[in-house]
Amino acid sequence: MAEYKSLNSIEGVDLAIKASFVRPIVLFKHSTSCPISSMAKSRVDRAFQSEELPFDYYNLDLLRHRDVSNYIAETLNVRHESPQAIVVSNGKAIHQASHLDIDPAVMAGLSA
Image (cartoon, rainbow, N blue to C red; front, side, top):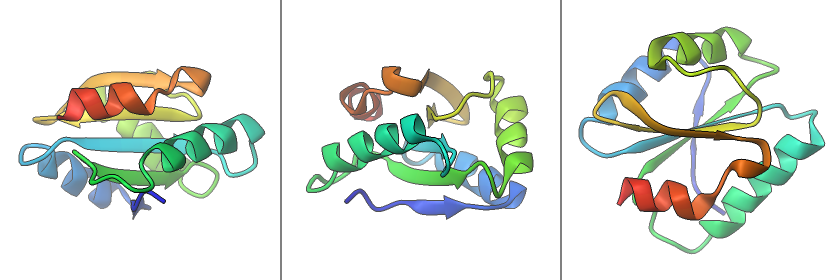
């Protein structure tokens, strides 16, 4: 399974965005009670289960940390959606997708 870092604070988001200047990051926001969100997360996890990731992978539980999700939307100037994957490089969102449009191959290609 893809190894990810849990995001649970605004400070954590700031540190993740700062890290994107060294290596791209993917922020994956999902609702643990939504079946579509679970399906999207499972697809991403399966796609990256045995690969060396070309990015750092962060996971945000929206039900527990909606304030953090709102901060991500405001800071990166992206519309809040769930589930949502946002690729960040050099402090800027370079790609975002939601629901079944989340494509692990696109995320990896943009991060390489």
